[in-house]
Length: 353
Image (cartoon, rainbow, N blue to C red; front, side):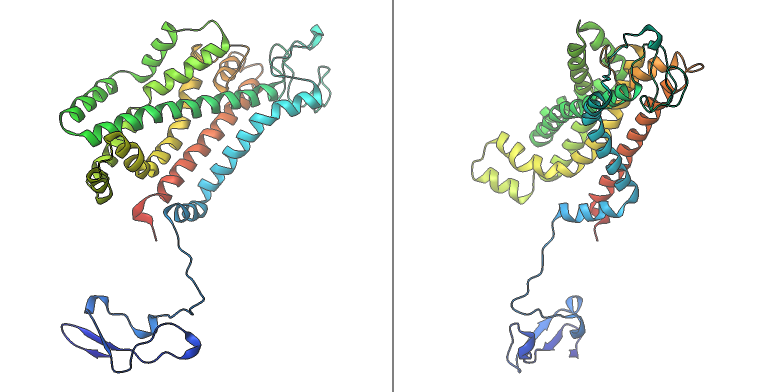
């Protein structure tokens, strides 16, 4: 190798047969700029039958996520909570005959029983979390509350994603005066109190059935939590709409809506997934607050918020009625936030190695 101010020249010698690869004549020189010069010892020639496995953004993100212990802990807790909330009530019914709304026929059992105790005060495994004032098994109600709370968080987040992604993508791609008017509307909605707006919607369109109230809760929470998502997607679209693949699609006559939702929106999935993961605990906490005030889930259904509202009335006498749903909800919310922070770090381009 000979060094020069303007360029470096590497002489390629005939490769040995056992290493494989393409060879050049011995007297042929390859001119390499100094900034791309690499020592010969750092160049590895692979055999012809050996291939290097490629990697993608999602594989790299998954590998970085697994290195984050708090994010892995949060993922495990969320998965276990979702599984137990869905199959737990059925297992309890098959094993003990208790359901979340079962009230004992014996009037002596219609009272709050401490955890791992029977009605007579002896040790028992029938009610690991005790019972409420009506004698209903608290474990079955906590698992049902987990199902309802997770359902509210996920479905409301999906509603907010549909509205926010569509609104932000259209505003960012069209730009100009349309973008200005659309984002001014977002600013106006931002100025309104979030929780008060949800309470007004639930009070005006209040349903007479528990299922109807639950559906209304999905729509109310989702319809007012899309504002930040719209801003995030708009910013991503503004940086993407002048990229080569968008200009090529526009030059070939692809319609505007197809460009937005087929070519641009899929490239914003990273920030969208991160914010969706962080939105779920926020929506669940809002639902718990609304249920605590009496505007959320209605009996006979129960959520962690409604269970906490019932338990706070008897916290001095029967503290387990508040402790178990409160600790379960807090652990789930912490886990979702840990998972969201881990996804944000895993999908951050500045942290790619």
